[in-house]
Length: 472
Image (cartoon, rainbow, N blue to C red; front, side, top):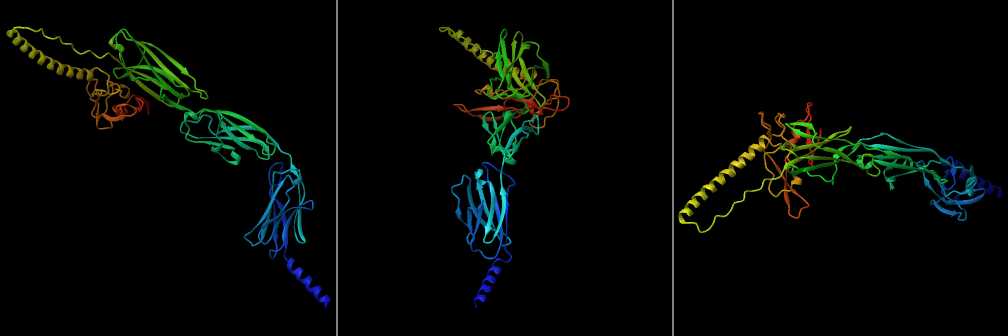
C-alpha cells in the first residue's frame, strides 16, 4: 500500500514537469555603468502556480508571482535598482522580465532564472565606456538658399552610443532634431535669420564625458530693401542744394549696389554725384546690411528726375526708385483794391475785375491742361493720376514712363501708346487704407510697372509692397 502511494506521487510530479523548459537571456549584449539592463526568462510549462526567481550569485534580487505576474519580492539594499514582472505571449506561454537600472558594480556576476527544479544561468560584466572621440558635423548643403532645407548631422565614436544636443547662439535647437538620439538637426523653410553658428554636443551617457563641434551655416538670400530702415521715395529740393538719396539693403552674399538715372526710358549710370556704400555688420550673419548713399548737387533741371539704385547678388537683382523733384510753386497773391474810388472808376474796376476773374479762371484751366500735357510728355511718371490730396507721400510712388517701352500690358486697364510721347496711362488706381495713423488715410497703388519690360530677354520688374522692384 505504501509503495503504491509513493509511485502515485512520483507520477503526479513527472506529469507536472513534463514539457517544461526555461531560458534566460540578456537583451543588451553589453552592460554599462549607470545605464540600464533587461533580463528575459521564457518559461514553458503548464499551470500558473508558484513563483519565478531572479538570482545573482545565489541571492534573490527579484521574484514574480506566477498567478498574476505581480512583483513578489525585490532587493532594496543594492545600489542597482530592480523591478520585475511578466507577460503572456501569443503562444500562451509567459515571459518573465527583470529590469535593472542605474547599474553599479553589484550587477556583475552569475545570474540565474529559477522555477522549481528548472533554471538557466548567464554571466554579466560591466563594459568600460569609450569616447566621445573623432566628432564631426556634416551638412547636406554647404550654402542652402532661402526657402530651402538642410540637414546637419553630428557623429562621434562612442561606446555606448552618444546622445546629441544642438544649440545656435545659445538657443537650444534639440527639439528640432530627429534620428538616433538627436543626431540629425533638420532645418526647413530657411530664412536669412537661420544663418549662424550651430554647435553639436555629443555626450557619453555612461561616463557623462562630452565633446562639441561648431559649424557656420550661410543661408543665401536675394537682395531686399531692409524693413524699418530710413527711406523716402520722393524727395523735393531746389537748384543750388545738395540732395541726399539713400536706401538700405540686406542679402547674403552682400549685394553690389549701383546708382542709375532714368533718362528717355533707359537706365543710365549716375555720373553727377558722389555715391558711397555704408556697411552695417550684423552679429552672427555674413551679409549684414548695406546702405547706398548718393549726394546729388542740383544745378539744372536735368539733375532732377527719377533715380534708381540696383542691388545685385548671385541670386537676384532688386531695384528701388527715388524721385527727386523741385519745390512746389507758390500760389499767386492778389492785393486789395483801394477804397473811395469814384462811381465810374468803380464800374470800370468791377468790369476789369470781372474780366480779371474770367482771365484767372481761363488761366487756371489752361494751367491745369498745360501741367497735364507737360506731365504726360516730359515728366517721368507712370501714372497720369495725381496723388490724392492729404495722402502721405511715403505711401505713394510714381514710377518712370520710359520712351522706348512699347507693348500692350497684360491687364487691359493699362495701355502704353505707340507714339513718340513720354506717356504711360493708368486707368486704374487701387485705394487701400493706411493703418497706424491717428486719422485713417487712403494710399494709392499703381502696379503698372509690374508689366513693363526692362530687359531684352523679356523679363520685367515686379513692384513690391515696399515700392521696390526685383527682376523676375
